[in-house]
Image 1 (cartoon, rainbow, N blue to C red):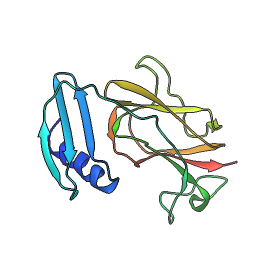
Image 2 (cartoon, rainbow, N blue to C red):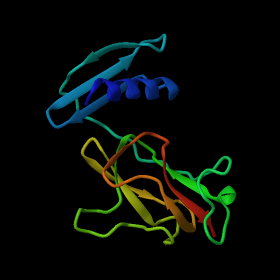
Image 3 (spheres, rainbow, N blue to C red):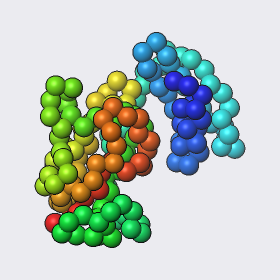
Image 4 (cartoon, one colour):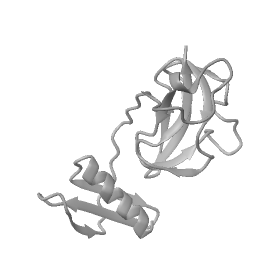
Length: 156
């Protein structure tokens, strides 16, 4: 983890009114705690266990005309599946497996569309709505930020 990642976590803590954050990754452990005035008051390396809340994923309308329109629909009525956490985006359950979804795949609320690895925990991300995938916005094994769009889909 580099300074850029730590600054991004601090910014997310400020935006979401989070007062404490703990992360354990391989041999690296970090704990961030904000003071009452909202500023970061310290960073210490502890042996505290990392905890992760369950992901919440709600598709939201796409503003404007981002991206090219897809055949059979327009970008204006597309929705996005956004990342509920910071982590690493994976399109398949393992390197040898096929992707969960491709462009044109029909999904329902229980369809797993990807995995986000956060703090060595693999979190299955579901579509949360019925639709057809129109765009995959990230490459496999790339870092993802909280709220970053992962997929676009056309509701059906």
